[in-house]
Figure 1 (cartoon, rainbow, N blue to C red):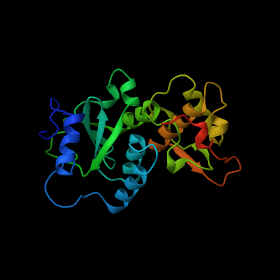
Figure 2: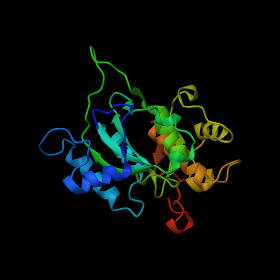
Figure 3: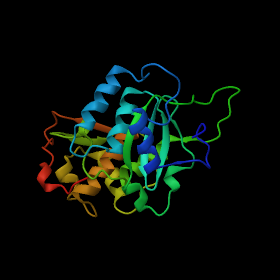
Figure 4: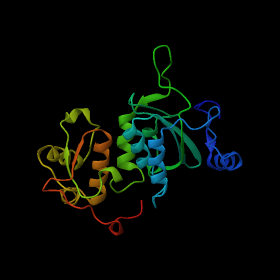
Amino acid sequence: MRDFEASTLWRVSAFERQREAHGTLPFARGEGPSLLSTTLLADLRRIEQDPASGDVLEVVAACLRHREAALVCLECAPWVWPLTLFPLQQLYHAPRDLPELQPQPRLSALRVLGVERPGLRAPGIGRPAEGFRPIEPLLWRLAMEGPRRRLLAEIGGRAAYRLAAVAMETLPAAAGALRPTMQRLRQETAALKTIATWPGMSLERASRLLNALYLAGALRVTRSHPAARDEPSPPRWRPA
């Protein structure tokens, strides 16, 4: 593949053959070790050991948490989609705008095939910005419509949640019961189990909303608040 041309994507089968033959991802640039930090690599190895290995939301969250640019190779059958994240610039690069993928079930089938150092740089003075887009709409849709149905590990466990002090209009549009839930979270701190009982909500929908707010930097997580409760045990969740 030649530098992320929009008209050129790897098929999953070709991607896997290339990786098996050469031991590296087909998007590798240059020689030498990975430029990803050791702390991010440690997080990625932990994610790989999870039963839901390939979880795109956990991988994206790790890159955001470390504020580190990375190329995430996504299986979006029958293609492999190169998604380059730039957390510091709040941008991402992809051949097409991932939030506009149709039909929507394709987002729910995304799976991470590998992560490597980015093959391009964020746009700057004198460099074109073609293919670069704001990251927040992507994060919101991945959280609300992607494969993960439970809380991210970073915000799970015994906890209570509240909307951070941000203007509601700065957050992506939320339909149905999501908007009233967000407004209620501005006024009170509640555990996941409690939020799931609010009108129009469920455990999955509440988990997705909390993940989306966390990735948008709009969620306060507290472990010591009197409202903090353990999240439901794994057997009560459908597989991610």
